[in-house]
Length: 269
Ligand code: DGL
Image (cartoon, rainbow, N blue to C red; front, side):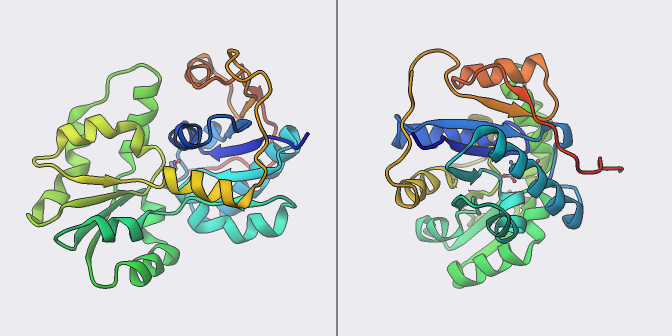
């Protein structure tokens, strides 16, 4: 049997992608790895991040015997996709901001990209906007504190509405803005809180379903889950085991995660 599809993120954000994949491909065999010891990625320097992402993904692919890797992290994908494809022998599917569908969805042509600091400043992101939203007005807004809010929410803690309102405030300066790209996989987990914080209806666009469709094209036939439906039938790896994350993963059908040992030098702030 071919190995499962490995979903990777810095933290719980990749679970928004897991949910989108399972909605379209409910029988897909999935496993999960996250580098929660080094969360968040979005405020760390590129050269350190590339080395770290390569080491974590290589270790997780080896541990899981995965047949494909979904990098369910915009911050990692806009930086390290080429390096990952060069390092790994399996297909690598990335997650990048859904600029194209957002430009198509907007009536006013005024959009915003909400993402981590790293993602909003990347040349990759600038090219995406030039190539797919050249006729639109696109504001790029870094919203790193939302990553922590999504982590809190999934861990069962209330979100801080003030933090969310402050992150979104610059968006409302443009009364014509009607569409927001959620360019961080953590942000769809906050969908309800984001909609509640908006002063008017907004179209929120994320990449989850596009990744599921791409996965079905690239990996055929898809590995199917054995024992699907049984609790904890999906394997998981984390870099800093803790009870709260174990409970969050269990909610998505994942087993108690194993510790992933990665040799990269720890990040010194
Ligand atoms: N979920 C990740 C993304 O899609 C990044 C969160 C972080 O900063 O670690 O960009």
